[in-house]
Length: 312
Image 1 (cartoon, rainbow, N blue to C red):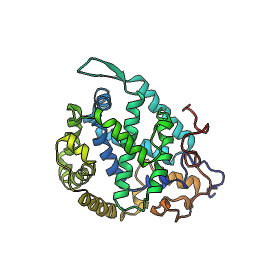
Image 2 (cartoon, rainbow, N blue to C red):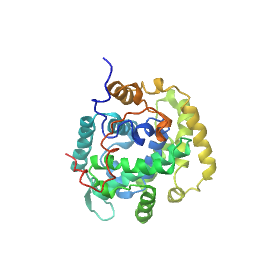
Image 3 (cartoon, rainbow, N blue to C red):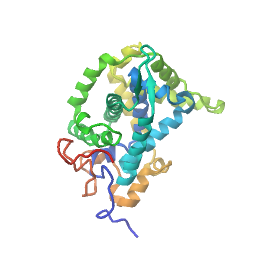
Image 4 (spheres, one colour):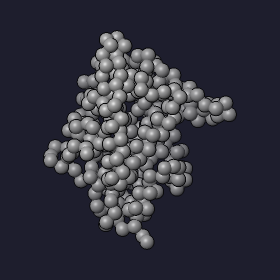
């Protein structure tokens, strides 16, 4: 029996959203690695990771779990997204970290730390997607950030505190930059991302593939992040050109192959909602057949009304 998009649950965002089409692009993997480099520059946030997990032994697992979480929020049912968010909030509520300089112990789920992680992620997604050649204009970028307030809500952030546009996101980074530094933990993350441990048989693949993708992720960081890491920033135009070339190559891999990789969020969503909900680059500009019904985030008003509720 064919899926009926009129009655199926579109999830938090739905195929009429920018998020639906953006998160299906293969350069999201590059953006995710960029986000790790950026997030590591907040000393309190990165300590929470390093003191509560074996990052070096399980970095790949952490990256895959993050991708699964983003996929669930984007393409899963409303119930699945809610459960994923509740699980993250529960874990954060149990974990603490210690400042080695002051001895202060603090919760990793503090609102300002959660907001930093959120902003570093959405900034990385936007930057890499736009510079890699997608038809992602300013209006779509602002709409994407408004939609992502719903993701922020699910992990315990007041959605009205999350940036709702590019200007607000830029203002946030201006405010937070005095708190940022490349401490020992950031350099540990940097070392790992540049030379992740792999099985000896995979060393050639690391040299050929990972080195290129990781360097591209790092090079796409803002100039001030390069300065904190103590390296000169490469020319922005050259990085954008490399992102566009790499994005074009990755998009040549047929989506029916890319989307087969576990856990298959996109294919499951299309089976639930119908083939007309297939994510496409044209979805950014409305040039694709998309579901008329809207997901929660796409149907909201940006977080300034009673439509927002606390995560349950």
